[in-house]
Amino acid sequence: MSKERVIVGMSGGVDSSVAAYLLKQQGYDVVGLFMRNWNDAQVTLEDECPWIDDSRDAMMVAEQLGIPFQVIDFSESYKKRIVDYMFSEYEQGRTPNPDVLCNREIKFDLFLKEALKLGADKVATGHYVRKDVMKLSNEQEEYRLLRGIDSNKDQSYFLCQLNQYQLSKALFPIGELQKSKVREIAQEIDLVTAEKKDSQGLCFIGKVSLPEFLQQQLKPKKGKVIEITDTHPEVLAYAKQIQDQPNAEGAIKRLKLNPEMGKVIGEHRGAHYYTRGQRRGLDIGGKPKPLFVLQTDVENNVIYVGQGEDHPALLYRGLTITSEDVHILRDRGIDLSDNRHIYSTQIRYRQKPFDGHIERNSSGDMIVVFSELQKNVTPGQFVTLYNQEELLISGVIS
Image 1 (cartoon, rainbow, N blue to C red):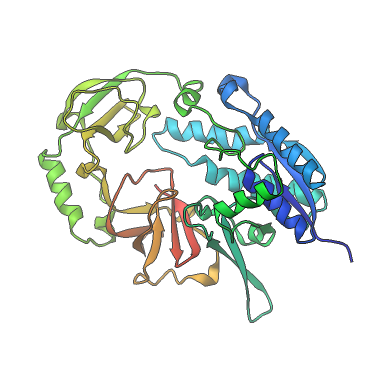
Image 2: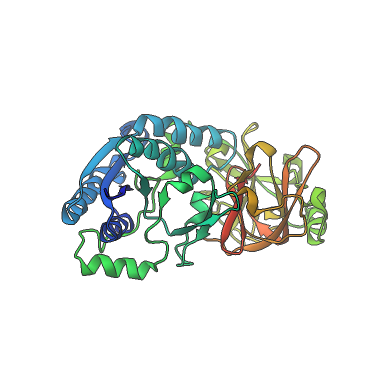
C-alpha cells in the first residue's frame, strides 16, 4: 500500500519547517513547495521583500529532511487576486485583510489545485489551527475548524473563509503544539530555521512598508484633517445611543461626520492611505491626548480625527455582513434563526474575543450585535464567530 502524499506549503519559516518534519515522522510521503507570490519590484521595497532568502531557507530545510522540493510562481494570480484587490479596497476607503484572502485565494485554492495535479492526497501548512471530523448519520463527514492549542498563536481567524472541501484536503500538523515546542523541535533536529524570526509581512511576500507600498499605486492627494471633539452635541447623542443595549437596527447606526462638526487642524497626503483607529502617520502634535482617525471620506478626500482612543466616534455596538458575504464553515453547526445564541466574536486577529449574537434584517444581511462596545470596527476587515473553540461563521464587515 503506497504512502499518502502530502505537499507542504513551505514559507522558509520555522512553523512550516516543523510541519514538514512532523509529517515525515508520521510516515507520509512529503513534498515541499514554496510559493513565489511577488516579483514586481515597482510596487514594493526590494530590500524588504526577502522571498529569495525565504525560498533558500525552505530548500535547505527540505534537503535536511530529505524530501523533494520545488518553487512555484503564483505572482501573476497573486497580483490579480490579492494586491489589485487591496489597492481597490483602500481606494474606496476600506481596509482589506490580505492574509485572509491569501489563504482563501492562493494557499487553499491555487496551491491546493497545483498540489492535486502533483499527486497529493492532502496539503499541509504551518498554521496554528486544528481540525477534526464529524461522522454524520448518512455516512458523510463534516469538518470542524478549531482554534490552535496555543492561544497566543491561534491563526484560525486567517482561515475563516475556508470551505468544507478545502478543509477535507488540509492538514495542520502543529495546531496541537505550543510555539515554544515548535521551536524546541526545530532546535533538536538542528533545522536552519530554528532561530528564524516570525514573518510580519504580507502572505508569502515578506515585510513591506504598507504606506510606501500603497503610494506606489495610489497617488498622494493632499486634503484636510478635521478634528471632532468628544463634546460635540451629535457625538454626545451618539455616545448615549450606543451605551444602551439596542436592537439590531440600533446596533448598526453610525455617526456620520461632516466638516461643519469640527475644525481643520492640518493636512494629509490622501484619505485612501488612512484607516479607522489609526494613530501613527498623522504627524500632528500639540494635543493633550493622541489623535486617532475616526472616519475617512475618500470621495471628498477628508479625514476626521479625535483625541483619545475612547472617543465615542471610535466605538460601535454592532456590524453588518451583507448576505452575499456571509460565509458558513459548517452547515450543521449552526441554527441561523436562533438570535439568542451567544458567539465568541472577533473583529481582528489576536483580539480578545467578546460576546455577540446574530440577527437578520429584511434583506437577509447578518447583523452581529455586540454585548459590549468595541473600538474600530473597520469596513473591509473580517469578523469571525465561534461556538466555543469552533469557528462557524465569518464575513466581510460592510
